[in-house]
Image 1: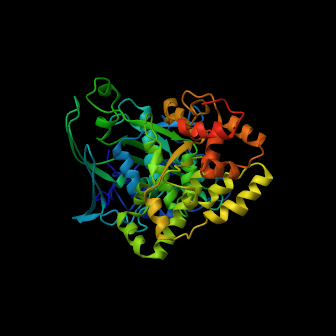
Image 2: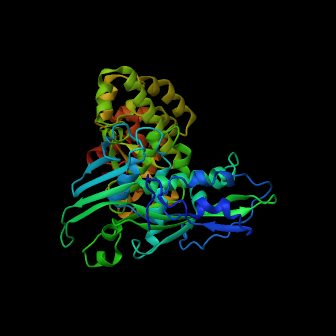
Image 3: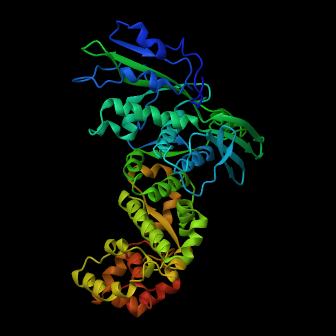
Length: 501
């Protein structure tokens, strides 16, 4: 099986795609498989058949798919090894990715703690421009999810068709493009995904020997083009089916049998059912949000830390050189801060809700949309907040002070959409649950709030008495913050109805 590549095929005279117009078949529906999947002329050869049929298209007789995704209705295991992680990140087309020309290819090298990954694309694909579609990320994730259903994905083919891909991407709901354009888009995305090759140089770890794999495609594919006959006698493209094999990387990073004997890896995460539609919604206007979603998707596996430094996220989105420019140019700082806070807002409304660490990310530099989420329920308290706290917290959006604070700040993801929860162990959620609000102390956030209201104090007034920020008190009452013993002494001294510390 041959992966899509950038060369023209030399067997046109025997390729059924090329000779189809000369044969004039009588069948109502036929399936054509090219001699070589690497041929770039397939679409050109089908131009005469790419007419839009009148009325409802004929139902295509596809080969039966051998995978079923999202059987639990929430999420799906997917190969989450670094090979796939970096491939998806490269498809975000970050401007700081340095691709180097070498012969007929462009190369990108990633140096990690465990080894080196070298990716390459055909030279005519320029990742810094629009020749690479960001939606190729989703094709990689779809295939990474499909291969987990096979025990030997490097030898057992995956069979899917365009309708499965269209449903995964949400294209089946789009009414603004016809079926022919959808098929051509799917074919283009699959072709781009299968053009990416990787060379792996991995260090030995325990019983797992060092790995050195030469360049090979991440995915090999054999497409079949299904044509149907219209009422006027002409044939048109009615569907595409694909047979995929995972590349040689899967023998080392998705090998269940050898992973049991600790001689290979089996690395997987959980792909939420809402992830692909969200990427399709964000990819054109909020590329930074897409980068952060990918970061958390791969990072938030069982036992992984849910915290992230703002500087790390900004480097992933913009690159370190661009952040240096922001130090000296106020218009760049304004652009970066505004875009970053807008991207964070997209994640918040999607359901990945961040908690800003008060020690490093104080309320005065937090995004303004956070204030609207944390408004007190009581109308008087809300009025006091907007008239007293908000004006004092407002800072210049592009000030160097705020920029310096943000680069030293951190945040923690404390809430997830329902379909993300399979990839986070219960142990990692314990620090934020109400029962853990204060180790060894029975006081809860609800008790603090009740005692405060009984004394007739607003959050603003109580925070001043405690010499704390209002956001700290708000987090305490929402059980987002672990109350330290010294803070418990302050609370019990001011609020008489709390049990003694």
